Amino acid sequence: VQLQASGGGLVQAGGSLRLSCATSGLTFTFYAMGWFRQAPGKEREFVAGINRNGGSTLYADSVKGRFTISRHNAKNTVYLQMDSLEPEDTAVYFCAAKRVISSVGPISERADYSYWGQGTQVTVSS
Image (cartoon, rainbow, N blue to C red; front, side, top):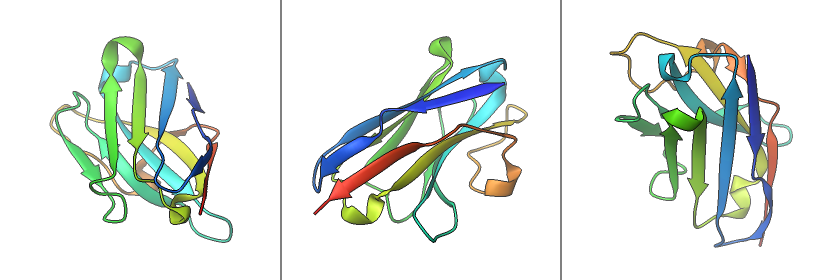
């Protein structure tokens, strides 16, 4: 199983970035997906989650209304659209996957996820 995150970079405050996480080696439609982030000296924290069919999403309060998680099941890819970025959003962003039954909603607990990508750096300048 491989999760490959991309799309990070340097952006000014107020700008936008779109992260992608391409997966392989798993049946993508069997998995709930999530995005987490880790800033220097801090714990890895939940950002957003999406259920198997994309019909249900969940967000951390700090990003609600600014970030949007989505998935394209035919491309085995999950996305994180990040708008109105703030310096506090600076972190390494990780995607994660967990196999679930169809009725399970988005998952916010880091320990519940089975597979992780390598991370992509997002830096927001003020």
